Amino acid sequence: MLTMKLITEQYDRVIAGLNKKHFNNAKEAIDAVIAKDQERRATQKELDENLAKSNQLAKSIGALMKEGKKAEAETAKAEVAELKTASKALDEKKAALEEEIVKMLCQIPNIPYDEVPEGSCAEDNWVVKSNLKECVIGKDTVGNWDTNPDYPNAKLPHWELAKNLNLIDFDLGVKITGAGFPVYRGLGARLQRALINFFLAEASKAGYEEIMPPTVVNQASGYGTGQLPDKEGQMYHCEVDDFYLIPTAEVPVTNIYRDVIIDEAQLPIKNCAYTQCFRREAGSYGKDVRGLNRLHEFSKIEIVRIDTPEHSAESHKEMLAHVEGLLQKLGLPYRILRLCGGDQSFTSAICYDFEVYSAAQKRWLEVSSVSNFDTYQANRLKCRYRKSADKKIELCHTLNGSALALPRIVASIMEDYQQADGTIKVPEALVPYMGVDVIK
Image (cartoon, rainbow, N blue to C red; front, side, top):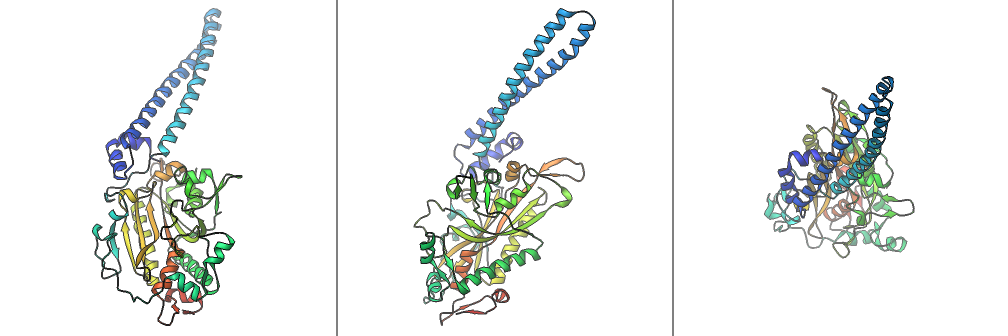
């Protein structure tokens, strides 16, 4: 969440940032939280004055008794008792105000960096890079991609290939669970495992420590990374235990550092994790749901960094380069988009999406989002670091990205690498993990 220091010291920047994110009633929300904080400050001041006066009177009682001024001492005792009662009420009021302020701040999104483009939806995102010669860089190409590569019309969509080659059984998934829970079989299952091992191996080479976290988290963890209270409708909730199935490994991995003070010398911290991920995808039914396009359960490798404010921009660049390197090694057509303010997540300060091109569907599929959250998550998590120079304790920056989400990568590999005889060529980087170079 935003800090009160940022809100009060950079008021105009905060309002402008929230407007860029198309947050309704930004000024009213910020003015309300400032007013509540001023009430808290006034309460704190009154409480401090009461405590100081109470301590002063308490010290005087002994002296008054020694001087034989018993009546004055008794009066002082009565006043101390009144002050203690008043102080208790003020302390309770202050705690209630602090709780209200936190609740208000949790409803206010992070503000975007200056380089985030203006815009309200996906059509306003900027294409900043692509490995396709036909790609035209800039805002106007997004959502109006007239220069897609000219793939043969004969190419089949991945759901047909999956059925022909017995790689994925969507109907069996419906029988066992429901729509959005496919069953991978034979070489389809092996392709999943190959991608997981490949992505983890590449992350290890890049210096990420592998974590195997729980895939179920408590409410505090969901709150810490900003999934709660913003995304309850997207998460599977185990009501009896009040646990949530994770939508991404970002949640449990980042929460490793909740309520932790890290020495600056340990930063940046680099973690990666493979997990199953679960998303209800509420409101998305009937929208691009064929095959692997939109699932409720899927595999994903996540990279997470904890860093200093001074170095987090460089960390973000390194993460973007890592994800791009994976797509290059897989030989997939891709593009990178810098998201506009209105299309960014609630918690991110800046975000880049990676999309691969689906040859048969003739459309772009998002496979990764790489975000810098600035201090927004760290403030919720109380994730801080101790500076080496002056030993001051400051909030960390947190970053994360998919490296990578499997379903649409699998779809793109199947469609882009399919051959005229109906087989699928295995990308060269995956052959050592697959044990075969062609899926028949």
